[in-house]
Image (tube, rainbow, N blue to C red; front, side, top):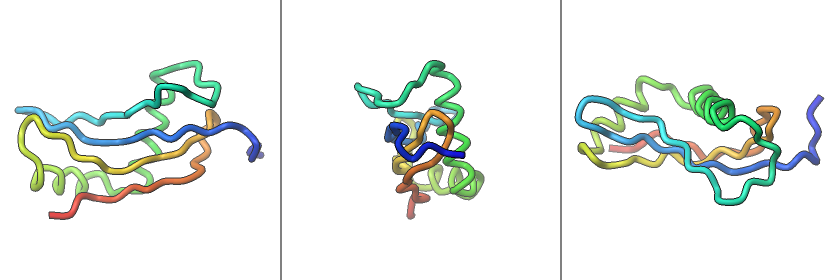
Length: 96
């Protein structure tokens, strides 16, 4: 059962394009309301929430089409509670 009163935080999500790879980037707010104890765990939680909502391969192909090396492509935001509940999301695959 989810506690609807538990605090949630909104994380920005983007893909960074390097010479030979793409990096999944989580943008963390300066002040967190939720009780996030493990930084790696919440970043993995954000990434899992994103790929549950956006089809990974077509999204990465779209990023490759619209971005050059050194650029970052925003995918939107995900608002999560520390238990992994997605409260809200504004995710979208990049458009060419």
